[in-house]
Structure formats: C-alpha cells, structure tokens
Image 1 (spheres, helix red, strand yellow):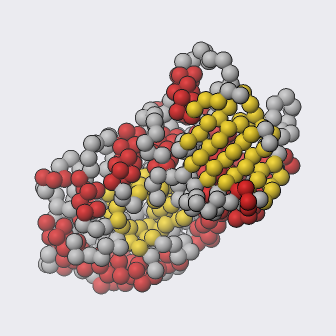
Image 2 (image 1 turned 30 degrees about the vertical axis):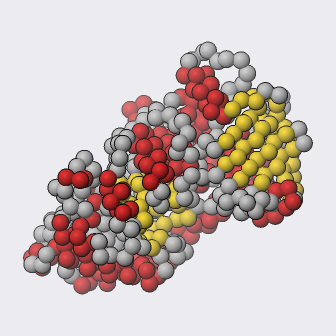
Image 3 (image 1 turned 45 degrees about the vertical axis):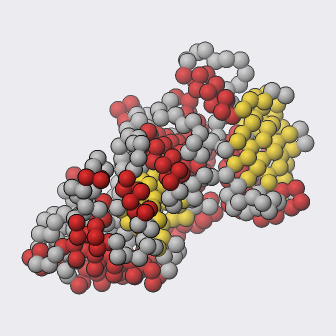
Length: 502
Ligand SMILES: [Zn+2]
C-alpha cells in the first residue's frame, strides 16, 4: 500500500496543479479543508464507503446526514462504543481509520463526529465505471485531528442586496470548514417589531428567516451571534454609499442620531439607549439566546449635536457602553466589541495599527468588566507582533484577532492568536462574500484557524479554488439549489475576472 504523508502530499498537489498539463502519475488527491493535524492517505488503495462505525453520541446525526448526502447509496451506520468512543479525546477531537475492513470514527462528542464526517465527505468520491452514482469510495489511511484555536469565527454581513441564500451558503461553508461561530450583522435588513422603521422597508432578515438559519446552524454545529452597532455605523449602510437605513425614509427619528450624516447614535438622548436596549433584547431572542452579542463600537465620529458636545464625549461613550454591557449581561450573554475606540490615537505603541480612541476613553475603559470580548481588527499583511492584542490580553480581556481578506494577514494573525493563547480568531468578509473573495477568505481563514502552524498557501491557486468550488457545489446540493445564479461563486459567468482574489 502506498502511503504518502499529508505534508508531502500538499507539496505534491501544489506541484501537480501549478504546472498545467504536467500531471505526475496517479490520481490527483483531494485536499481536506481545514488541513487535519495529522493525515496519511493512500493514493491507490480505496475502501467502499458502504458502512461506518461511530459512537452512539453521533449515530442519528450521521445517519441523517449520510442519507441526505448520498441518498440510496448512504452507508450503513453501526454503533460500537467500545471501538468508537474515546474518553481521552477532547470535545472536537476525532480520529478516522480507513482500512480494508471498513471505516471507523473515534470521537466522544457529537461535534467531533460532525467534524469527522465533514472530513470524510471531502475525500469520498463516487465509485467509478457507472453512468450514475451507485456507491462511494474513500482512500485508505488514518486521520487524527483537533483544532488548535478554540474560537473560530467568521463575521457575515447581511446587506440590503444580500439574499438569504447567500447568508445560508456562508453559514454552511463556515460549518463545513469547522468554524464554530458566525456573527451576523444586519445592515438595515433586520425586520424589527420593536422599531419597524429601523431598517429598509424591503428588509429580508425576518425573524422567521433567522429561525430557519439558526436551525440549520445548530444542526451543522455552528453558533450564530447577532450584532447591532450601538455607537458609530448607526446608519447601517456603507459609509461610501451615503445611505441611512433609518433616516432616508423615516426622517422623524433624527433626534436619535447625530446631525452629521446620522453616523453616530446621539448618546446624550435617553431615548437612544432605551431603543437600543429593546432592539438588543429583541435580536438576542430572535437568535435563540446565544452566548455572545456583538455591539460594534468602531469608527465613531466626534459629536455634532450641542447636547453631546456639552459633556466630555468619552464619558458619554463609556456610560453608554457600560449600560449596554449590563443589558447584555442581564440577558445572559457576553458583549463582543471592536477594539479601535478603546485605545488612544497618537499613542506611539499602536503605530501602524487601527486606533480611533482618546486618552480618556482608553483610561476609562480599563475600569470595565473583563467579560467584554475585544475584537481586535487589522486588515493589512503579516506583522511580526500585534501590540494591541498583547495590550488587551495583559489587561485581562478575552481577545479575538480579526483579519479580513489579506491572506498573509489571516495566517499571521491566526498564528499569533495561537501562540499568544488568546480566545481565538474572528475573520471578516464585509462586502467580499462572493466571487474570488469567497475561496480566498474561507480557504485561508479555515486553515489558519484550525491548524495555524501547518503550511498554508498565501495565494489561492487554481487547485485550491477548484477544491473550494467542489465544496461549494456540495453545499449547493444540500441547499437543493435550482437557480444557476446560486451556483458557483459568481452570480453570472461573465465577467468574473476583475474580482479574482479581491
Ligand atoms: Zn448627540
């Protein structure tokens, strides 16, 4: 039997795929994303995927999903706790053994069994030689795997133009790539009963839709976290667009927002906080009471109303965040917020990093409860150190490092998060959730968060793109897609090129 170490396999793959028309002998193997901690798979020996041994914990989930993935060819699921259960394993740790006898999954939790099945699905191929699918095979070998970072999240934006299927696809892809949290930020698209005017009239993020997506997320093993921006970004629209999801159509609510563009909430108006607290409670309940709530808090401007300007603005800001944090704590969740308003602009320690706060906010914030989670965002390329992360960590806060679409940055920040032992990573996608950006961000983020010290390509080459496209096609099958516009990563075939890798 010809075994090849996974690390070597990756190099081989890169070689095979980067040199067009010069494929070496043997079939090009399929990669597993995220790359497992340890993996040895045969290039020549395959086992029929007609039977699988799992522990009792994951039995019904496995049976249900195999049926949905493979229909009449679904493998038989056999429970054997003696073989499959492994009490020494962590909650997300699994081992897959594939030999001539069959396929065994060792794990002790449903989540770990899910991860094992996601891995198996990525290497299973239909048996050859028939017109239609009549069975499945998997390469023989052994995979031993567990994540190196605890919180592996992605931040997903729901713009007015975003369609619910696109949010669903990202949630499914994140779960398939073994991420365990997805923050969902509404950009004026949540349909609120508390304040029906607070958002676009054609909003698609209904409570019913969230309930549907949450059920999918729960089943797939990923937790959805809601977000409402409680300081800047109150327009719920991209700054460059010049829109305001509340005021453009409902100008009577202007006193709740600062006069300059309505970008900040008016923090001196007591009605603002009352409304935000009611909106937070509504959103929290709509999301099924998750353990975290994201309040944004970034990129606020100076005040432009006389009431807010009559007091030190830092004091208004701190009182506001404190009250909002108390509301979220009383609901039973932990507050997450962006970091940039919490450190002082001009402080030489943060040179080159994102800083928008004042001396007073930086000092005042240190009195805050340490259960607030700091989401430290940085979107440029790899750095050797991330002093803002170190700072918040030293101050006793839980910290998430938040990269965007710079692949070198995603990898470096994930490695830094791993090495420094912070809570984890929350990748962002913003308006780059389709086209070339989709494989770019999801491939890099998933691999960097799961197994940060492994070799991860900083450029999404043709092979990687085709692997991600294969996975997106599987997700399309799960979503039973009928509309060609929903297939692949671009809405239309022509012209995709300008967006490649952006
Ligand atoms: Zn004001």
